[in-house]
Image (cartoon, rainbow, N blue to C red; front, top):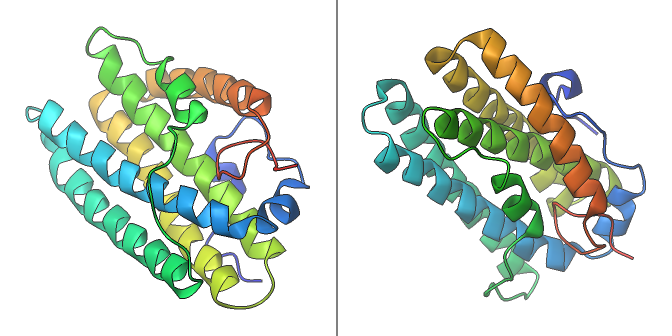
Length: 204
């Protein structure tokens, strides 16, 4: 299956997802879709929050505005697939993955901005990797096409957050912190419960 521009070395993930994640997640695809829709909506919200929190950082304004629009378009796309399968989008419990990653963000500025951008980058990277697994595990059809089609944009979102960091902070500082956060991200996701979520261990 075409990978849509997916390039694993560019994702800066410390640990790859186990091979059994894709088939196990594909068996719970209706739950995964609802979780995925929430993630796209949250990603749009995060980009907008950064715009309002850092109006004095001109490098962030247009890229994050465009990113928020694209994330919302992905949210609507996933909703279309939920509707087509007779599902219902509704409230979901917050993700332990995102909550634990957010705990790694230092509170004093400008380190808070650095860490927030890099945490966003890692979330996008893990999403991209997991979507590749789904694209390969799902039978040929609309859902496999959905996930194959999203790979390039998810990888680009990861790169965007890293590039924005390097426009504001010293590249060496960015790379060092990104490496440290990537190690912690791999520890967090490996310790999560087995759930039908995009960012969790494989469902039972």
